[in-house]
Image (cartoon, rainbow, N blue to C red; front, side, top):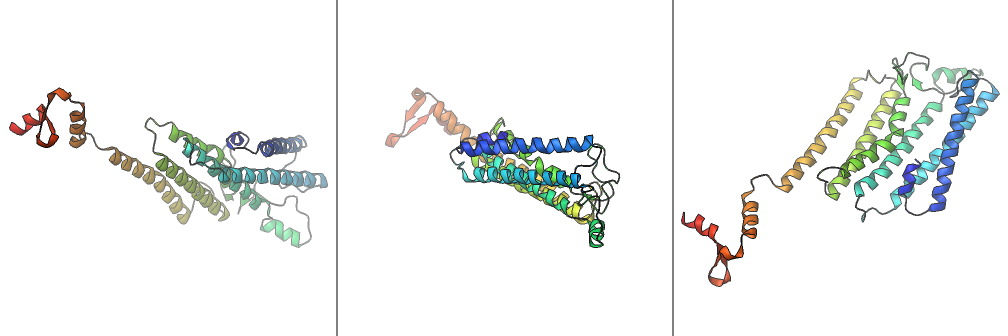
Length: 292
């Protein structure tokens, strides 16, 4: 989020405030997590003791501030003009990345609601040790994937949360890639591809969130979820290839006789042309073709 502020035009004081708030907030968040690790207890959803509940509440408040700062950055990027910029595709990718990252952060709010067992305990007047969870349909302690520990027996909201957070890197990198092509696309086509990539990424986030809320593991999607993922994958392949094919057609195929002849005629020495009635000229190569 901090590096993207350099592409926001003007608002120097506001940008400085956002930068400091984001940096300080995330540093404090990491500090709380380290404290809880040193205490030998969980940091997220932990309300076991008043101290744990206080630290968990602080984490939630800090992330809320960071999230609101990301919304301000997204708004500033959307309001500034990009029509006259040569790197329009890259500049368009910035608000897409910021907006989808803010949406990915918002997915974390779904994790803070009590799951059915916690809700039942609260209704009985009991105090559960945890309120909220990453998993849906399976406890957070269930076996998970290697490295990420995403649930292998139920849905896991960390998956769309992770994908959304990294939109801020993926989409700007895509916009930068369009600028680094050996034959750069026209501004309109490059902008269209950025918008398409943003919508495709949004569709992926929505599908993964839907899958998690259905209680399905990432690697074991149901038929409807698998169909949606295949559709998104097919669109991600077909649309760029279609635009590339249209680009080849607009540029003309090799062996375009009319284009070749006109270029040859334009470069032929003026001395080898003969006059026609009405001031028209004809070249020696034209005469040779006519009388052969």
